[in-house]
Image 1 (cartoon, rainbow, N blue to C red):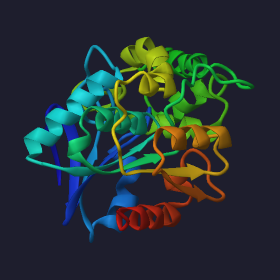
Image 2: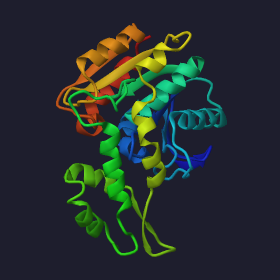
Image 3: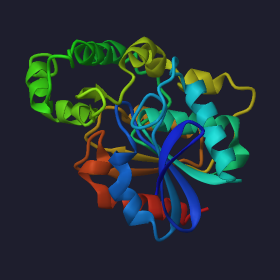
Image 4: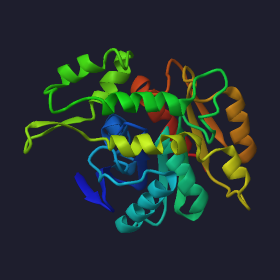
Length: 276
């Protein structure tokens, strides 16, 4: 079932205890459909498009506080008292931010290949905020008045975004605007460009350590072993904050572990939610 609530588009499937899944930056609920189908015999699953993504409304701001408030409104309007939350990348920081504020509403918390670190401060690698700004500048430079097909947009972007897999992923955000007879981005590109610095630096270890009291959470980290988003020292830091942390290492998977090793991700989700 596809519908909208709290200005968010979502898909609902399955039966059982609620599980809300949030995608990452540039993604949408579409990215997690196959995982949801594999879990629908155990959970009532809500695949949500975050603001400024997918089919959800475009808003003028895009912070973790914004997305947390959206999630709270969504949960309340659905009449959910307590839910498991799974978030990938940016969505993982959203569910963590939510759980730190409303721990009584969270059953299981699952972070998919993301930790609460400042990704602008990234020793040995380029500043992530700058990298994403380059991507977004490239997308903003696309003239959809002149380029009429995905193939034409792809050819235009090739010298700007050389990684073919990344380009293919980004191009999934193009839709046909039939009323205007042209392509349109589902992403709110300018707002994301303006917000990217905060997205890369917010919800980090320092933010959590500065809290008066860190809630006890049932928390799991699912990590792609080929992903650079999580280093061994990151796992150690998260365990210091949340001693009960469970970690599932997914072999032969990078940051898009749910696409690269879907069955292992499903197995990890089922295993961790069976533990208390």
